Image (cartoon, rainbow, N blue to C red; front, top):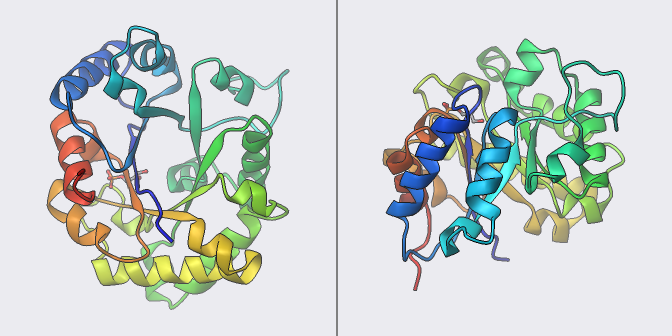
Length: 264
Ligand SMILES: O=C(CO)COP(=O)(O)O
């Protein structure tokens, strides 16, 4: 089963509209004439989505521009109404948003998002035909306490509760060990592969072997141009969710190139 790798830039709370424009112009000029064998996604802050949509999805955008998909970093679990500060899935759709990052460890730990809330957001995203990038991962204390598998099992089973196999096929899982995020400490390729294989086995348990073979599982946590190739060579790693190293066009591009099969 061949799975198309997916490389997504999670800019977090970085880059307003003008910095977004600078990045995209530079990225597109560097990639002119290139054929990508992987899917490329950029997740800017909400306020930069209109600019990104203009740059990538207007009639005048170049060929490579259309190859880049847009993601949001969050969405509301509600449709509309009195939810101050929230953004709905239908609002995201207006800006050609295809993916939405849900369950990121920063949302879980800083904003108190529970597995139940993440599950509700995944369902709402699917109602609007958005593709969730569903993040899971353990803390260092959990790993050292021998709880890696139980934490991942809870996050996967609760996060995907009552999600149909049809919807699962539109979901990407991102395994991001919390201790590797923004720390410069990457999971070794063996540690990452082991966790990815376990997550895939969980999907097989719940949905069966076909769904497990199809689902893409990205790795996230201090991915850099220098470690992308080794991580992506692992059989169960299908791309990366990249924070710091995706803030520079050259570094994001180097990760994609080093981590992708050559185009023929
Ligand atoms: O959280 C991440 C992506 O969602 C990873 O961030 P870093 O690549 O900066 O470690």
